[in-house]
Length: 65
Image 1 (tube, helix red, strand yellow):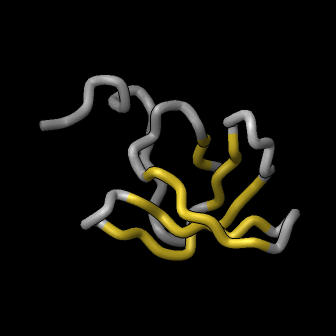
Image 2: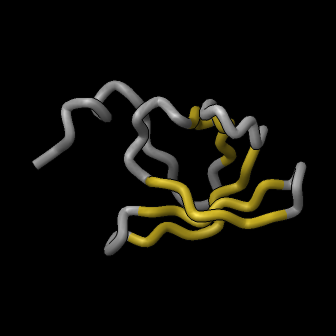
């Protein structure tokens, strides 16, 4: 079943650039990998030089660039 709250936002794919719209203000990030099993994506944030896991289903917390 598709989540009705994520239907209006596009999902990111591997190698997409995303802009973090959450309160963490991480800036732009590059999606490295996507895990369908956990519905997460590994994102590299150049501003901090760190990699973090982010929820794949977009609830408005990121924007695909």
